Length: 239
Image (cartoon, rainbow, N blue to C red; front, top):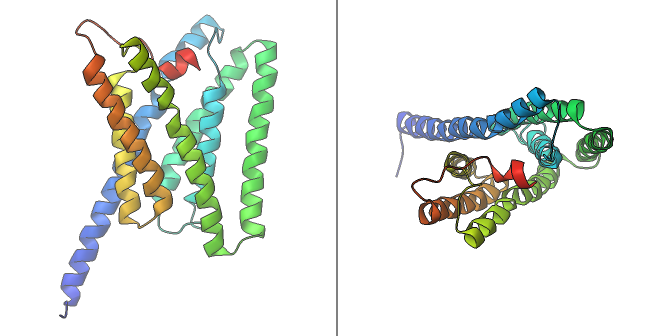
């Protein structure tokens, strides 16, 4: 069966539109997650203290964004620029949060966070230099892809603690619906983006994230009470 050039072009155009739409949607939903800690850091700035908050989640998030950002660069994986953009924005936000945390933290926490931040940059530099100097383009994508999968899966595994707490307490106090929904929508969007791009390094970890997002939404429906309002994300309270 022969397909005309116009038909093939139409199919390609529709495919590209759907692919880009999924990637753009993922960027937008990720932005909701990136701005969610702003109330916490507004509180830190006003009180001029980091109180009992931990900076570790933002260190982990920065490392994850940097590795995935590198995976999305044309030199590693051509054609997935929307992976680069979302992680670039995410890295900027995480770096801003870490900077604020360091400014207002006590001396011991400040030194610890500075050491961890330098460690993140050292790991990222090692990943970049190794992938460029050691691997050819195809193997480079595989190498960085596996690192990004490990990083993403470890980040998506963090909701398991939240899920366990919700089940134990039968309360969604520390699992805001908006963040659970945004996590699910972002993961689903990038899962679709990875499927369109035929890139398992994108689709597999985000598929796992989507499943965990569904579990959170089901738990929210199961355990939410009419008068219960989530106070803050668990990540901020228990990290």
